Length: 301
Image (cartoon, rainbow, N blue to C red; front, side, top):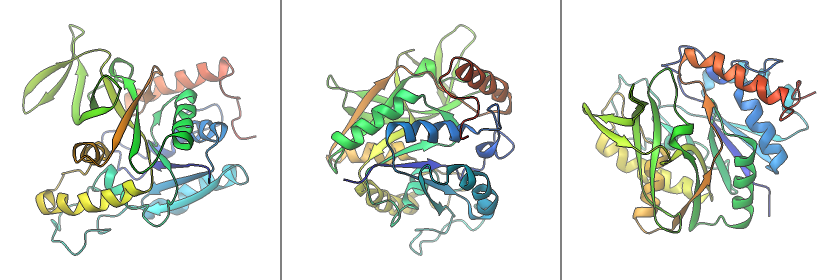
C-alpha cells in the first residue's frame, strides 16, 4: 500500500488577515506554519504533499517550497478556481470568493488516488496529531470509515476575534452523529464560549470536540464532494459568499449512511493566524517549540 498523502488547503483569500498568510514566515529562518506541518507529516510517514493553491500565485509559491522540500517528500499542485466543476450551471457572475474547502478538495480529483489527510495551511496542529492521522490512514481508513481529529474547543480560540469551527456531536463510540460549521465562535468577557447565528448566542462547553479541518479520507470522498457540489450549486450558486465546507460533506457521508466517521480526540493546543494580531503569538509559540527542541532551529538544513 502506498504511503498516505497530505493535502494542504492554501488557496484561501485571507480576507480577515489582510495578506498572504499562507507564505508568511514565523520560524527562526522564515519558516511558514505549513513548513512545520509538512515536517511533522514527513516524520509520521506521509509520502506526498499536495498543495491546493490559486494559479495566480503558483510561481511564487513553488519558488518558496520546491527548493526546501526537494528530496524530502514528493510534491504536487492543484489549482482552485471558481469555474472548476461547476458543470455548466449558472452561477453569480459577480462572485469572486472561492467556493470553499470542500470545493478545494474536489479540485484534487485525478491527482489524489490514495488515502489522504486534509489540513489548513495557516493552522498549527501538533506533531502527535500527524502520528494519529498516519496510524488511522494506514490501519483503519477505507471507503466506509473516515475520521476527524477532534480538538477541544477551548484549545482552538483566538484572542483577537471570532473563529469558525466544525462543532462535532458524537455517540458513545466517538463516532460522528452530526457536524455543524459555526462561523462566529468566541469567548465572552464572562468566560463563556458561545457561537452567534442570526443575532442569537448559543453556549458551547469548553471540551466540545471541534474540527480544525484536519480530517482523513479514502479517495472516494472526492467523488462525494463532486456529487454534493452539484446539489450545492443548485441551491446556493447565485449567492456571492456561500461556501461549500468539508464538514458539510463529511456530515452528509454520515447522515446518508454511507459509512462511519470516527472523531479521534486530541489534546493538542492549536495556534494559527486568523487575524493579523495573531502573528506575534504564533511566533512566540514557534520560538518556544524550537527552544524546547520539538523542532530544530533550522528546519530543513
